[in-house]
Image 1 (cartoon, one colour):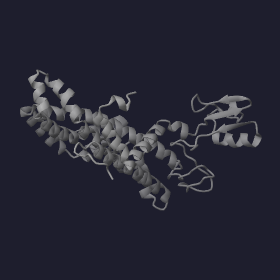
Image 2: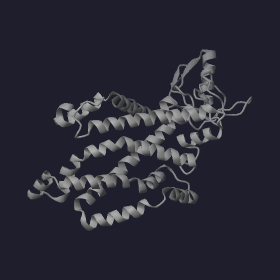
Image 3: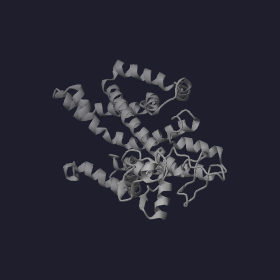
Image 4: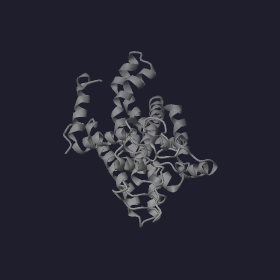
Length: 350
């Protein structure tokens, strides 16, 4: 791993300046931890046990195959209900079960005979944020919905930046007819109503995760293209580019080895805000019913349920609080990065 001592002094100064902006730096740490934890959501949020000890044998349902109830003395051949098994083994003393922190998966309906869902938060039943309108655990759907939203926004970010940076840099560097042609294409393309395109496609077929990425990507690369065109146009006139041309450097070498490294601060500055835009885009589409198909865990789907069932405040309040916290952290990160990588900024952010 590259250490700070292998970086140039200016980069070290920018990183130290970023660390000095406490709210942005701590938001970055918390946000990174949340993303990493979401990658292991099956260990933290799952209806399958982490470990089952029964009659001297150890089982690992979360990491292995389905364990029939008959194997564990429950008398049926379908998969074991590990929450019921946990209670049975606790009473009998013939073993034990270690369940995840949230012992429900996001697709599971937990119903009872005395009332209809949604059920309010209950620590006794381990529904810490209650259930939705069909009995699914809200906390479980929040966690898996966050993972879906964050990976959607990260994939969208990488691909849209690759396209936008490449086209924008080429427009700014070559100029002339090439620049004029792409300007007209972008102007026409950006006037196409994005929501109507989604509605038309959704009426023809059910969009999946990658189809939604492609649809949003069709319009998501435009903003970065304009930024890169402007900054490349400016950098092209600087002395180091003229010197590289005089030394016989190729156009690709000038763009990738000279101009892009000097515009990386612009690219980095917009990354947190692009992540926030990706999360908002997916949540909005799911809320309107044009996003991921049910029963995919989604913040937008939870928000839609909550707005239609305002008497069950735990549904709408949980997703609003989660979205607010994530977007606030991303905003703090963006502000800190913008201050740290601002080439005209030489004072400590306060």
